[in-house]
Length: 69
Image (cartoon, rainbow, N blue to C red; front, side, top):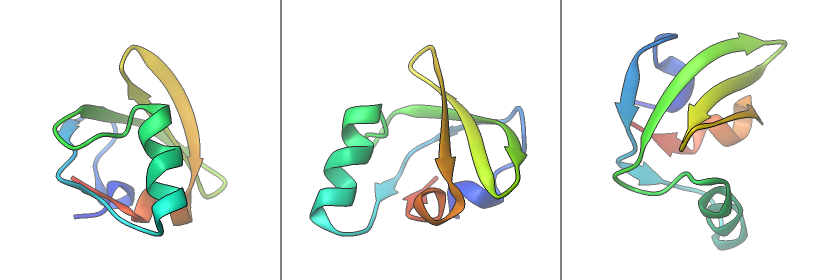
């Protein structure tokens, strides 16, 4: 399922990162790699706030849909 459908506070494992090559590289640099753990903190105004690798990151809904957990 896409990251946008994950429940808040629930830890998920990233199964796939989709999108164009440049989008995947950008997300990889932020820490969104296959096998990595990600937890949705909240959704605010279409943005998804997540905890990944001890960091809190906000990404747009469109980007979050490309991350499959």
